[in-house]
Amino acid sequence: MYCPHCGIEILQNYSHCPICRQELAQTKEELKPLLYPMYSPSGKTKGVSRRYGVAGIVFLVLLVPALVSGITDLILTGGFTWSVLVVLSLGLVAGVSFLGIILYRFPVVAVSASFFLGAGYFLLMNWHLGGYAWAVSLATPITLTLWILVLAYWQFLLRYSPSGPVSIGVSLILVSVFLLIIEGLINRYLVLGGYQLPGKGWHGMLWSPIVAGVLLPLGGMFFIIHWIIMKSERARKFFHW
Image 1 (cartoon, rainbow, N blue to C red):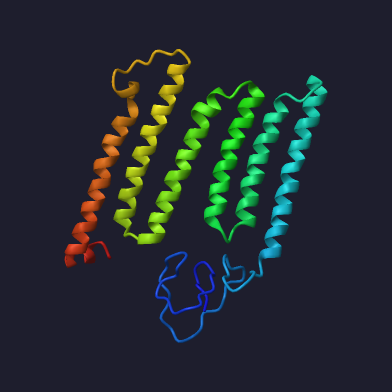
Image 2 (image 1 turned 45 degrees about the vertical axis):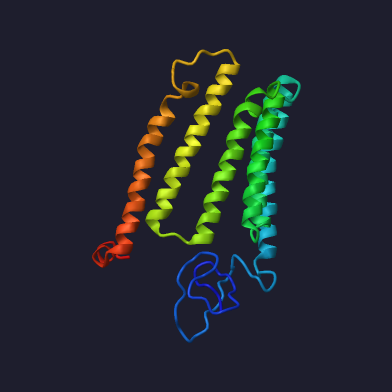
């Protein structure tokens, strides 16, 4: 049978799809596969060749502005100055697109590779502009931190299949942590550059503790809502749970 939501081929009798977590219809009729399923554990999908075709089209579409920018830069400046930044940006878009198209059966690998590709993009851009200061101290750590938090949240959803309120509560906690890390990295970069921070708190942090102070209690409220829903039949009916 096949999941009617994402198209995965299900080899056992499941009540919920192991990929998209959608409830499967309890019917004696065999569910027919989607026209272009996302996954197929028994072999290659029918849409593989189509995906490679899409990857080729994306490459050709991005190649045109890259060539135009390079030729224009060469004519106007006699070299490759600003066009390098354009080509790097188009290369990032192409790389992320190819990873999503080619590695669609391995989403964790595709997402991880996309984040590392983004970190490499910042390093190359900073190198072209001169040095590695902001790429090493700011952009790359923020990118890798976001990658870790995204994977942690993703694995949490896949492993525990939490309810809606719990998912929102955990996401608010992770956003709070991410904002605190971002401001800490920004302040560190500014201090290393000789800038005097106006704040007097921990590493001169100002706005992220305020935002976290709002989001964390809000996340706690969602955990309380989940507990009430699990304990009260009336609450489950009210929230259509």
